[in-house]
Image 1 (cartoon, helix red, strand yellow):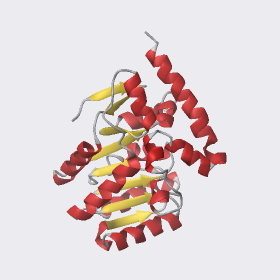
Image 2 (tube, one colour):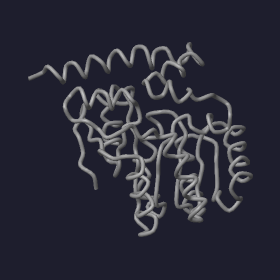
Image 3 (cartoon, one colour):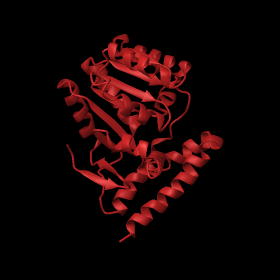
Length: 246
């Protein structure tokens, strides 16, 4: 496993995209489980005061830096990460890998319209054999064990969970053992919405300058203003505090 860096109470693996993909493929071939996690500025802010989320994040086997701000912070603090490994890009690459290697995936999350549309897209683009099962992300705590059972009996090798934070992180942490037969488990936030065409992702040049969050904010300002504007300010404060605390 690649060396880790310590950043704001968590441990981020210093991995490239290709190194991450290789670790996941090896785990599936060797029939091991990898619990994957990504962290961005907002999540690093949240774990400072949310112990349940902190435990859920740090219990993961691989933690990648999803946000460009996290990569910049690592360099500013003298523990530079190789690159950003965005969760949405990792999912896209893993679905492609699953198709090539004949692995099966399970999609859990988003609303019924979105997840059903994504299943149709994947079946048309790849094959119906790719999909082990799927379900929307609206469920009660009482329904969780039924969902976990469905995922396990589907015999999927990869599970992608597209529900909000911290629910997805805590769900995967809580049911990690029950899902031990699933070789790869990962939370992917709003990725289903993007792949299904409900929301648009920022152009590549905006991603590269670290302003993807602002592009997302412009699409849904009423819902996103607090997460990004307040959250990013808090993140900047935490990084500066870490830099000058000694």
